[in-house]
Image 1 (cartoon, one colour):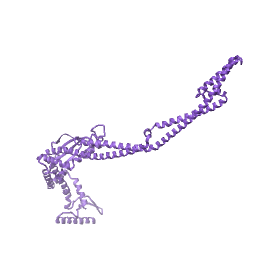
Image 2 (cartoon, helix red, strand yellow):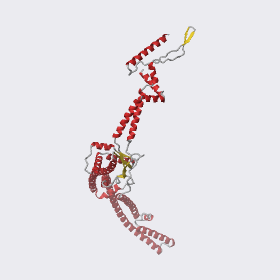
Image 3 (cartoon, helix red, strand yellow):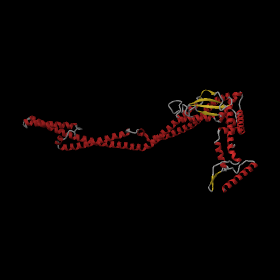
Image 4 (cartoon, one colour):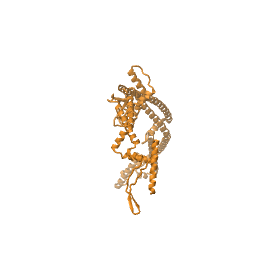
Length: 521
């Protein structure tokens, strides 16, 4: 029943006219005036005791370290992530207890002219909450090299001093942080360089010992290890010896064939005439005698064709042929002995070439076995040298960073710190007006939630008569009489005095009796 009562109440409130609302506000003015006055008084008290801050702003431009820059443009960040990381580092440095304590001590000493004591943890925490690092208006943090440091304080001049001192302390702390970082890196890199030098010396000693074992073929081994294409001198020497050995074998074979021909021609001289000149290339005397014998025989043939056998010229020509044959026979014996000696020398030279070729092949096989180990030693030395060079290069960069950490500035202030013409946040009058308006809204809401309109209170007084034409038939007569409709009255009305509750119970009981009598009729 209470749920239905609330629904009826809200429905009645929704149908209120502006005049009815105004009447309710006038009648129940004590219910909305009291919250309005209380909230207004609380807002006034808060506005009188609240702290209003001046907001001082100092702009900064950040840049990366030149020695650690990986871009072609000096003083430019490699990417936005690097710049954002650096700006976040600046913010963390600004909110560090050391920087805040040093800033507060420096400002207090400048104001009082006496050495200041270390601030408490509460003062440091309050200052940390009033400190912020923001990007320019409309930009995203880390997208631009410019950032603004903001500090709030109740005193305008103190706020300006605080933000200026914060800039100096941040720069000083950044210098010390860079110095500590560079020193730590330098010590680490110095140890790395020392280890790399020791490793290089050890690998160089192993390489020197291995090269001493190689001996005279070290140059060939280095050439084999260094050149990826082409042939070394030892390989070319092996090829040359092989060619000479083949040439010597060919010459010996030709001499053997010539020896066989000459030996057969010694018994049958006519075979010498039929011998080709290519076989007599190494025997120019025999070839000349052969040509002379042919010429003498041709001369005898011509003379015999025109003269008799007893003719002196014919006899002289035959004698010449016989002398040439005798000389040729003697020269054949000499040539045979010479060819035999030449064959012997050729065989000896071929054997010598075979021995040299075998020695070269043996050296090449030995170098092939040593090449893998030598390549490993050379690779170890090269790797140790690369590690040492890289460590030395990094050590040089860190040393330059350490030298520049005490003089260079990575955070440059833009102009002078400034504050706006007004304090930050809403003013006292604005707070009072907002508090008063809030109390008024609260009071009006309380009025409409708790007060029952007059249209809803009338059923509590009794019944509401309504006349309706009702036709009742008694026989053939029809008569119309008014019918009284009794409005429902809630049985349980909370928060009512006892006499009013008893009156309402009587009304309800009378209504039920009337309803029951009408039903009987």
